[in-house]
Amino acid sequence: MNFRKKGEELRNSFKNLVYEYMVSKDECRSFNDGMKQADIFRECGMDWGEKENCTSSNQQYWIVAILRELEEEGKIQRDISTKKWRLK
Image 1 (tube, rainbow, N blue to C red):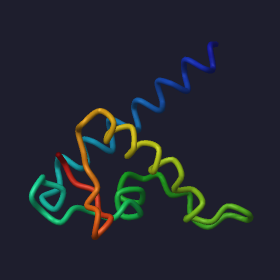
Image 2 (image 1 turned 120 degrees about the vertical axis):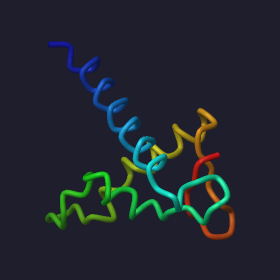
Image 3 (image 1 turned 135 degrees about the vertical axis):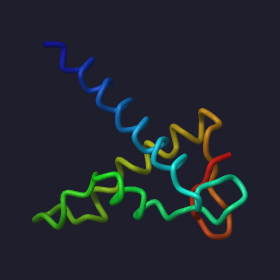
Image 4 (image 1 turned 90 degrees about the vertical axis):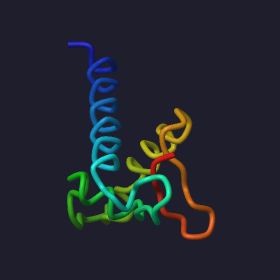
């Protein structure tokens, strides 16, 4: 098994999940308020809960990377003042 390729597939699956979730939420529409990254993270099922040496907050690095990827692709944007994410 090619683990690197499998990891890339998983990352793309999670990125697609996050984007599809945001498309489905009215608050993420381009002229609405948007959502906090923590809420997107939890609603997409990425939170493993509080673990020893790995709090829920620490687990959110995944969602940060995913949101930044989607931002680089021109699909979403982050509001400068509220720090919430929405569709572009």
